[in-house]
Length: 94
Image 1 (cartoon, rainbow, N blue to C red):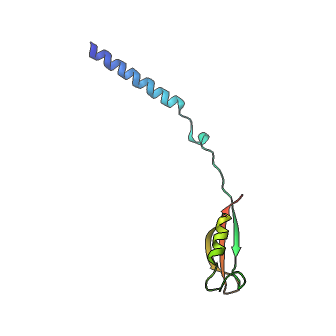
Image 2: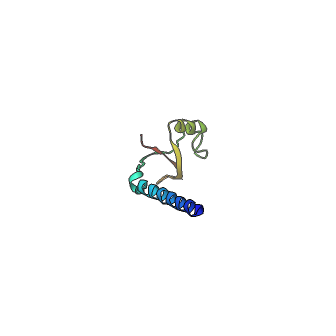
Image 3: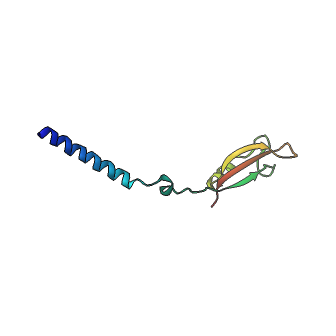
């Protein structure tokens, strides 16, 4: 008799617990806010005035300056119609 009552109370407790969990459960789409990130880009083509030589690309000092401004190097590609390199930087739009 005592054993039957313990099982009844235990089952009742589990049912109440499960009903509480499901009653508080909201759809995920309402709980999540999707934030769209936007980016800005900067093209940098080194010249003899801005770096020691075209073979070196961008100097360490120039890279550090851009990094302090929040820019990160995204890609390096040949510039159009020339043999110079083009550096593309990106950062979150402010």
